[in-house]
Length: 330
Ligand code: 13P
Ligand code: SF4
Image: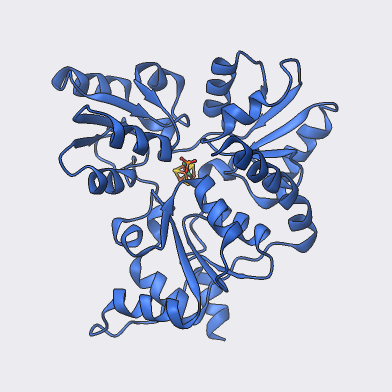
């Protein structure tokens, strides 16, 4: 009965005794249950700090694929949990809050995408990892922002390609590979709202600042950027660079790891169009909390389920991506 109620809510809402040391309790449960906690860079700092691994979408899939743990707690969004489940069908994959969706994945409904693919016979289908397992099931190869360029370039120049669902990433990859892939018209609500004017104001205030941008941003923002890359690539650049100040145009959760790795450097989150909102935070990513993580491990709920037929098809393009990435040393 309780589980039905939790399922309706999307997370376990059992009250937690205030005297409990949550971090110690999570670590204890993790050991007892042979679980690992994987967290994306956009998670709240408290979750990144307790995770076994923190990384970008590619790293999360790679860690899920090779873990020997019995339970994977994916602190990220639903499609990341699905990817882990598809790669590890025999493991229990949990996400602290099932409501953690993704506006980009939502911009590509599986039946509409499948119809689009059917209408374009002879096209190779490349899908960004920010898609449902059902979309991956009609995909030839999955990419993340870390490997999209190399994977697209692994196909002949004249290959006819459908790229979905992110039009901004698709446009960017078209521009740097000199291709003309057919793009699905989707986007992420966080990366779409950065303001050119406000970034330029910041740059005028701090002329020494390096602008870092994720390729999910619109092309007008990417034109301003000094460095364009996945969360992992932006972090790596910030760590290795001798520059001291950075304006960061991606979800602001990444600043936690940047600041942690480079305590002397200054990171300024790129402001959204509407300065009254915290729109450079992904409301889905931020649904996960330490409390929900504790309850999720304790009750082993909510669990990610993927239809077996869909999983059988979706694993093929995901595994293809992992194999190519390994060969490329990514
Ligand atoms: P990466 O993790 O590949 O940088 O992508 C960011 C993102 O939007 C995840 O949802
Ligand atoms: Fe999806 Fe955008 Fe949130 Fe990433 S930041 S999970 S693309 S909604």
